[in-house]
Image 1 (spheres, rainbow, N blue to C red):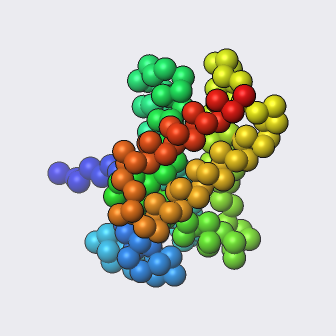
Image 2: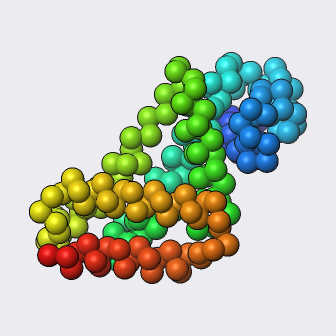
Length: 194
């Protein structure tokens, strides 16, 4: 009886193997040969799914995005009050557990890689837009903030970016509850400033 292979699951396993190699050794060691070996595949089998390494990298990066978006969708389904929803949404932008730390590490590796590879399109504008959308959401919900929306958007983006970087570099310094308190405090100050 022929073996039935779930190709999407196999591609996901290959992408997750790529993440692990990036985390353990850096992106320069996440070669097709090393990925195939770590995933228990031949290079030919790997090439069946990804003919070029760039395609594998794009898939691995998109898997990070998909999981992130899935977490944001779960926040939307909770029926939270507007400020709670904004805080929960922003909390998903910072690495607060092993899974999200790995994703952040992979994200940063691809950002650095993309700086030197002109053919590698990161399309990471969505991250900045996602943070800024919180400001738009709060305004629509009737929360008036600074009269300069661009300043509020840029300030919130800088705060979340800095927090994400700090949590990535020093994960033991701040836990998820502390992260939530910090984000809540920032959002409350932003709303009460007017």
